[in-house]
Length: 289
Image 1 (cartoon, rainbow, N blue to C red):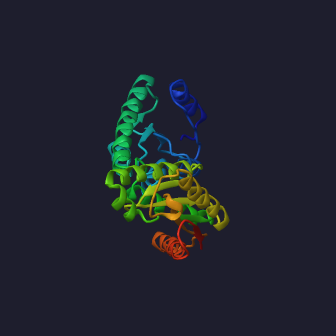
Image 2: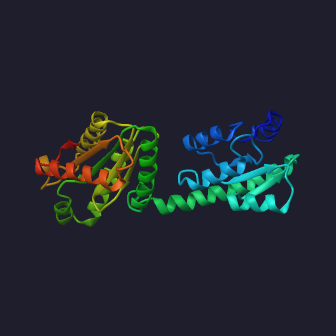
Image 3: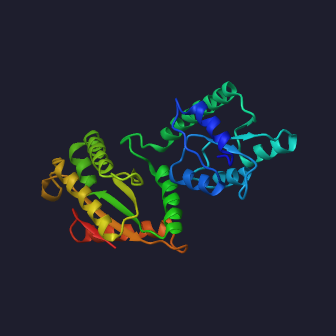
């Protein structure tokens, strides 16, 4: 981000052969882009008309969805107070103008390497060890992010809670190793049903999975939930005590256009109530509220 086209062109020339480079000439556009399509790294001018680079950096760091993006300031300022302001705003480094292409390239490479390593560690901490899909920790963070985004944009946010029917009886009959295989297969089927960029399916309990479906009204969320229910049934995993003698799932769905009074907990509770209704109605079905 820089308000001078000549500076943008210079940086684009340095990085365009090896990286996908996006440009913004004001703080508002830069923040909006980072929220919509989080980049791996931001090069940011300090002195800008309107929103300054320091304000942009603070805004990025205050948002959990963009807080982990490394920010390198590119500035003509060269005094201790300005350097301290960069660090205090959350920068990982700063480069002085006029830029030295080799220095700039090497510093960006170093911070991209650190970012990749941090992403790998974060991924390991956010993945369920058995099923290899997101775990509850990742679910909780993404839920808060999507709730805030849907509140800002006044769009629907749907949650689907999925429970494997009579799973305890399955474990008791076939053993825990078969139970683990069942969980893995069901998890992968649910994960494949998440076809849009913002959708996420996570394992949030023993035999319970929860999906976040931003932008879907009750009808759209029902379609996804029924697709999941049918895909699990199509696995045709034998279950002597199950519905139709095979593994099935019950799904409860809640969908609202959240205002500031709606919490993640209240939306999940709504989906849980629908799951209870699905079980009470005989299991192997979808209930939406």
